[in-house]
Length: 439
Image (cartoon, rainbow, N blue to C red; front, side, top):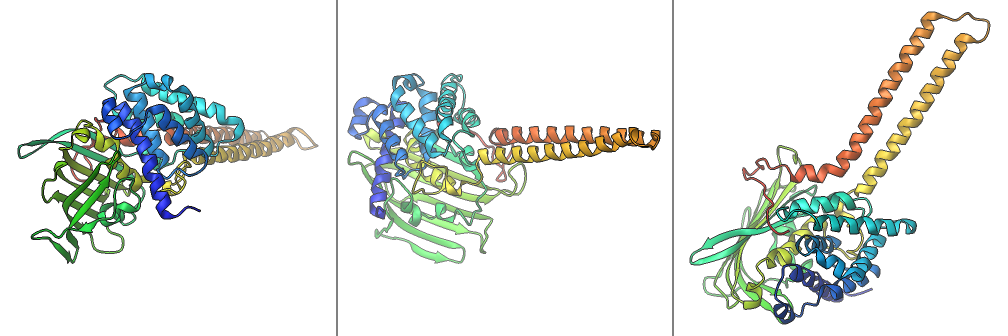
């Protein structure tokens, strides 16, 4: 059994392979990728496939799937250029999803076909729409959980003006069945390092005027954030965090915001907010809306040359951990993600089979009763015959309705994610959901 230190080291290495895929798909210059010691897509996929196969993947498989959809959406030709490595990774993922051995090849073909379908989407297709296409076709073979189907979508197309700077605005929003209280560590920066592929444990900042105070509804502290990228890139950043939450053991909201205390040699702008809020109306009523917003501007040349870096690495890493948890075996469906789509369909099929058997039993009983009208010594009773005919008709109508309901349940199970993410009406905060950037 590996120690926690070893698992953290594995997580950082594997996250670098995911980042390597994302840097390639983002068309980061080859020399910049070399400077960050990021390998090519073929090597990255083979390394990740090996970790999935032996059960030592420490990053959520959702991060891998996210990167593969990005690869298909941004650089679809690379799917065929790295065919063997991609097939190895998809096979490992399907097998870890506990697909029966006889169905593995067909399931791999289905997942591969879903990526090809994404690669053929119009250029204007949003990241969220691309994910819906992929998840809709792979929910059963990969046993996707609802948390995975509702994957956080990251939008980095906004420009945020901060003084003389034009920073990159990054927004991630998603909904989850977990409560704000369940996700409270997501809004606590002193806990980020426990599941992050980049963060070290926060330390207190001891600069002039440093703040460290607790209040009745939260706290405010000046902390030093240490983030490791690759190729020796380490960012040490002083930030002022303000954490608040509704009182009680089951809060309806938890909030964190932060600002940069002073520019560093690597960062000119770094501020944002995380918010967990129970939805009180609409299609998501009762669920939790998770929002993570950030404005970032790097001075460091290599990181600055990767404009989608937040959505491709540390920011998506943070929210995916909130969505599906911090895995010990990230190649399998997440334990905390809820019922898988395959489980839902299995339940629907079982209910349909039960209803069918009940229908057969009911028809058999009616048929026997009708048969007695023409057998034995008793004369046929026209009135009884008419009643039996009416009951048979009513039974047929009920069975038709039940079959229709079963059919609708299957469709709803497969389409729920699309219905939820396409709902562009006002959210509970009065804002409008959008998903136009790179995921």
